[in-house]
Amino acid sequence: MKVKAGDNIFRITKFQMLCTGNWPLTKHWPMRWQFYYKLYSYFANFVMYSSLPGSVTFFLVTLLVEKNSEKAVDLLSYMVITSLVNIKTFICNSKKMADLIEQAIQRGNDVSEVYTIVAKSYMKYITALNTFGFAVGAFLYIEYTVEAEMHIFKHMKAQNSSEDESDFLIHWHPFDTSNHFGLACYIEMLRGIYISMNNCLTQSVINTIMIHSAALFKVLNFNFQNFHYNNMGNQTVANQYKASKRLKKYIREHQAIIRYIEKFNKCIQYVLLLEYIVSSLMVASVLIQILKADRRLFDFVFAFILIAQLLVLCCNANEIPLQSINIALGIYESHWYRYDKEIQKMVHIIIMRAMKPVSLTIGPFGPLTAKTGLERLKLAYSFMSIMPGETM
Image 1 (spheres, rainbow, N blue to C red):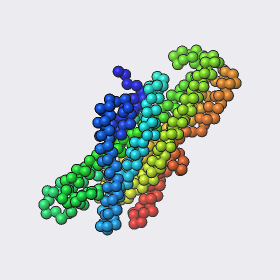
Image 2 (tube, rainbow, N blue to C red):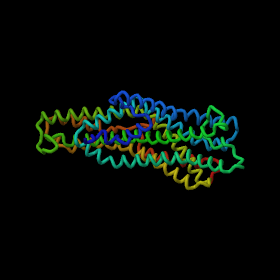
Image 3 (spheres, one colour):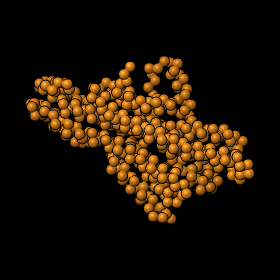
Image 4 (tube, one colour):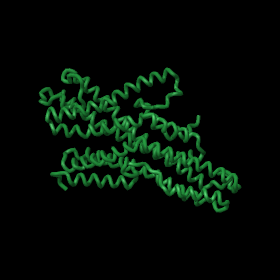
């Protein structure tokens, strides 16, 4: 059976959401499978969301009770990443986001063959993005979980080691970790897996919907550019009635796409704001570590990942206003001048609306574009340059 375009463009995102227990579109499954998947979803979400209070509590205890500021600084970056992933996962798991994903898949399955062609052109890019997302998740898992497990293994081999076992943990646990150290390690390993998987998931959902929205504008641009033909395969010019009817249909599609992106923007604008703030601080802190620390290879890789993830997000968001403005060029290149004032007036209104770009916003701080990403890197450099005691 041939896979439809909408299902195809979201297939990797669907796989990731299934693995993390967050796939919302299970209403067509058999009742038994819905029940089993709901149980797994409860388990996966409990493991995921329990990481936030665990990491925050452990950071506060280390800083305020144990007065170990050096270890608290090491825990800070993990706590920030855990908090951000938890918030993004919660939003991606909301009813609003589920409706947006369902609408996107349905629209992709229902639209014309042109969307199928456009979706295919984007699929390699989406696959590359998700491959990069998997690499980021694997890197985070190796850094915060595997590396800790290796230290624990070395500690257990060195019988005379003076280090406390709790020094290797990164979460607070509601039991005595000295007596149940193996259980604590297992819980942290499990949390590390789900944090990494959910980080991949949230990036995949947001980026895929962005690309899907840009693809819809690209298809609509093609339709507006050729509205005067009877059909796409036949280059005969349509009469006044057919051209007007088709143009009104495309105007309704244009309005529907704009409403869809506005809903998406309301759903994720504060996630983008958090990304905007946190990424600047994280990039700055990693660059400072590159200047000071001994783990240069790790810090260089981590800095590259943070910068690449930031620029990918901004470039994908930037594609939406670019494609929305191109609607004006597409309709202008059609044979609108062959028709009467009714169609000419509609074309004029379409051009005026298209010249106001549709974009995603960073909370109250304006649109998210490629320029915004570069400004964020400049901001990170500013943070790094004003940090006291740093060599610049």
